Each structure stands twice: as structure tokens, then as C-alpha cells.
Image (tube, rainbow, N blue to C red; front, side, top):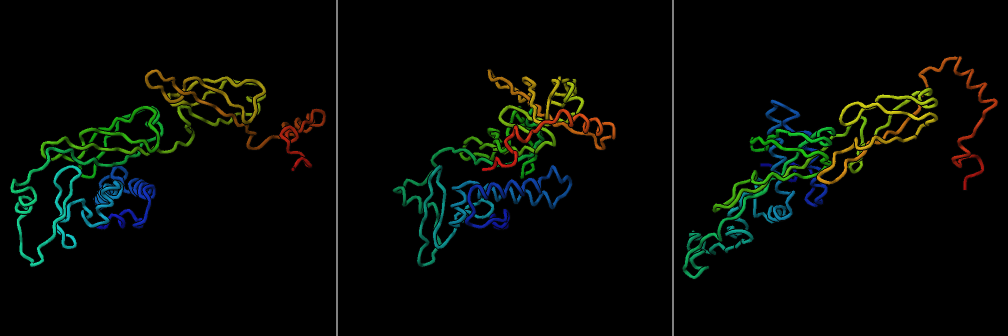
Length: 309
């Protein structure tokens, strides 16, 4: 199996954030759901997931760097003249190989170590957690959804994406990780959610933001227009005299609240847009109007000549 650093295309001095960023980038590129039926992509995705399981865990990374585990996460029985054996949670012992090269029994070593009583594991211990990532649409993350995902080992799971899930949020699926030992519980699956951007909506906390173009007539005279929300289209009233930058609120049309928490709002920012090709009548009207109704918006904004400091 390829070195996990090479698999993630990072250096051995990479920081935790650099490792995470590299994994997320490659996982998106080689996700089987985005490349159905491509066996080479699926094989590559498994390698990427395995590499992150080692380098994304600080303790496993240290053990790999010391040569105590290999690229698949398995113990390396012999390393530099030492024998390594895990004897339970938090316990690792190293034993010197005989200088004469004679073979020996692990049972004999543990018998000597524990005063002839033999050796036994310290009881059941939980299996390892498995890290995974999925990509979901902006709307699914905002409103909630259930996604069926396939793990690197081929196992499929239905993952519930709670309403309001944020980019980078981690979901825990208890008992879906690697089997425990000695009767211990299985580990968990940790699913990092990557939320895709939306062409129109943006989010801050539980509020949703949207820019909406309006005509000169709608802004000047007021109007009722239809705008999209997370939950479908709604009618919204534009007050007369609105301008580019005018922001209106649709109450509780943002991310749904949890428990006693209130839902967020949706904020609509207006952009006044002229016709693609203003006709002569409009141009003549504005020219004549400006001769007797001139105004200077730059002065109001403090941008007139000579105001610079």
C-alpha cells in the first residue's frame, strides 16, 4: 500500500489543517457517488480514506512515523530489533530480540514479565472510529435530508443530515465503526459534511441572504414581486422609493430552529437594474428631469472631490 503522505500528496511536516484540507479536496474529487461504476476511482477513494484514518489521528500518525504501524494501520511485528505487541487500551510494550538470533515464544516473554502467571488482555476495549466525508447540497444541509453513503469497505449507511448542518460539521454514527476486541463495543463512524455552495443563497448563522434584481419602475413606484426561499416561492412587497442596497426581511424564512430556538430570517438585498438597452424616450426623460432635479449621491457618501484625506 502506498505511503499515506504520498496518497494525500502532502509532506511529512504537514500540519493537522493541511492534512484535513488535502483529504477533503481528494475525497471530493474521487468520491464514488460522483464517479459511479469507475472501479479505479473507487480504489483510489479507499486509499485516500485509509491514509486519512492514519494521518488524521495524531496518535496513529506518530505510530506510523515511528514505524510501529504500516500504511494499512496494522501493527508491524518487528521493527529495528524490537518486538511490539498491544496488550490492551493504552498499553504498548517493546521487547528486545535475542542477540543470538534464537527464536522465542511470545507466551514465554509474557510469562516472564508477569511472574509466571501467563498473559491476558486487560479486558474488552472499543473498536476504532472511522473518519469519512460526504458532500451535500446547500438546500439539503439547510432543510435536512437523508443520504445513503458507501464507506471505503463497501458498507452502506443511511446518514441523517439535520436541518441547519454547517460546512465542516461532523456527525457521529455510533457503533458503525470497526469491531471491538474482547467483546468490546464497535467504534463509531465520524462523517464530515461538506456543504456545496448555492448559486443564489448564502448563509450566516441561521439567516439566509439573497440578492434580487428589480426594475427602475419597481424600485421607484413600489411593487409586489415573487422571490425564492428555502421552502418555495413567496410574494414580497417592495416599498416605493427603494434603492440598490435596500434590504428587506422575510421573517422566519431562514434555517429552522432547534427545540426552543427561533428560526432564522431571510434577508433580501435589492439591486436596481436598468433595461439592457434603455430606449430614447427614457433617456430624454432622464436628461430633461436631471436639468431641474439634479442630485449628487457622491457628496452624500463623502466622495466628492477635495474630501480625500
